[in-house]
Image (cartoon, rainbow, N blue to C red):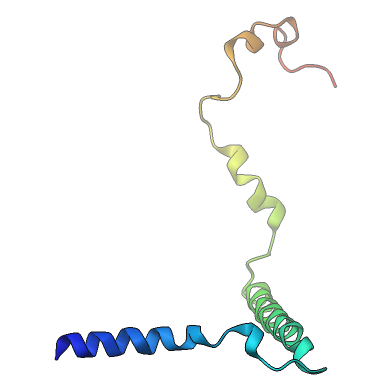
Length: 99
C-alpha cells in the first residue's frame, strides 16, 4: 500500500513535467506572456519596496544620517590595515601627510 502511494506521489509530481513549453500554442498574445509577468513582478516588488521606504522614512530611520555615519569613526581600535613598513616612511614621522 505504501509503495502504491509512493508511486502515485512520484507520478503526480512528475506529471507536470510532461507538459513541455514547446507544446504550447503560439499566437500573437502568447509571445508577450513572459514579458507581462516580468513587468507585473517588477512593479509589485518596486511598489512594496517604495512602501517600505516610506514607512522607514516616516519612522525616522533616515534622520541625521551624518551623525550616524560618523559613529564608526569614534571607535578606538588598533590599526590592522596599515602595514608596519608604511608607518616607517618619512611622511609619517610628523603625523599625517600634507594634502
